[in-house]
Image (cartoon, rainbow, N blue to C red; front, side, top):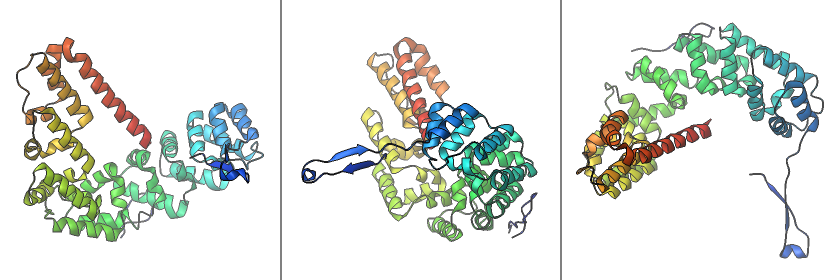
Length: 391
């Protein structure tokens, strides 16, 4: 049995909406009210300072100033702070974005709060660019406790990931790890999962792709493993950790709703449990998506629900990026008598984009090329918009 021991140190791990202000006027208030939209307070002195002294865009400066109306004299403390940030590599755009999310930074003590944090990152071996990128993604790092959060978390992460470059790569996505007590979450969870037979490499992979999963309360992680065991997941299977993660994403109600969705597709009770053991990632798919694919498939008149039962991993494919463009192309081709039969559902959902284009779009490009490309571009735009909203 393996265990992780955390050693506190710098090198390695290992030792155990705008609101409305309504003014009513009696006696007419029984029938009428005058609602005045509350205007955000502004700080013209600060806004002008950001534009003139540090070349912020007027709109950004105004937004930042509206969140910090109490700072009456920004010309000393704020000037030193912004000058320091520029000197260590922050661009004006990066500073604008940081201050939009945390305008109070302008009144932070440069020598007691900001510089010591930057020094910590430098002493750990991070490059100037890495420091700028990490803080730009998660500015709140700067007001986390150095001794209680930043140093211990960096020590643990460097011990696990092996290098500052890997830690920087990880923190660009999950910088909030530096605001968490990893000794109480990540470390005991890793020790427990390793004791269950899950390889360390697999757990580190989970850190990159599902970072929040490993920050569960340790008692909850034990419950998730017990539930996975109860459902028949095999600890010696490489899919076991995915079974545990799937369980962690559902409460009892969610599990029952998902079970019903699979039953409605035609899966038996035994078949659902077998599916959980073999393809647990399917249980991370939302009930909404399962129902949507069910309706979408039946609407074609070409496929039935048994197609999903026979090909359950078809649920992992994107409706917008894979099924919609392909079904539309096949409908057009069939309507123009350019094809006699649709491909089997198994072949259709497994076919790569290049193969589908080569077989069904390229030879008939004048008929279907524009429609296919529009669908693909629209699906990509939706994906980009969704990621942008998450950021």
